[in-house]
Length: 118
Image 1: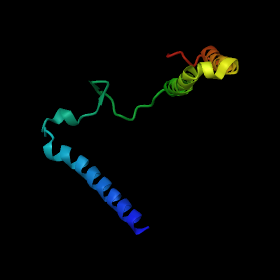
Image 2: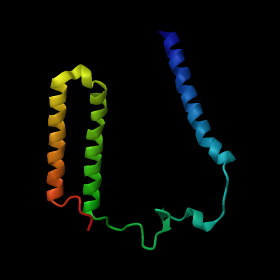
Image 3: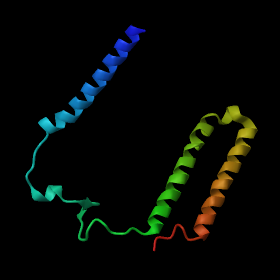
Image 4: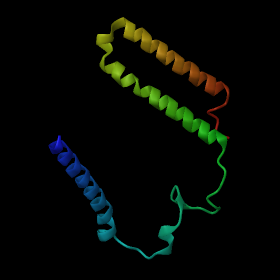
């Protein structure tokens, strides 16, 4: 039991030391610049004209959420494609149902105007 605790303690110490080392190396060896413009906030490579506290449109968040939902759901297609032959007709019908639900969701969002960027 004590051997396991010693190994665990050494692992924790090694992890902490490695983390501290990886944080210290860029600070010690990194280039330093005294140019004022390097510390300014940039958005897409263009300096901001207004303050950073602008309000974003709700449509931006809706489109981002829709993208994430469809992106995560598309990840389920890869394991299905790998096991396609082993799953047989049952797996094929289940995936058709899954894709149909996604298509209905996309049509709903499209009809409600959720994909319009006005």
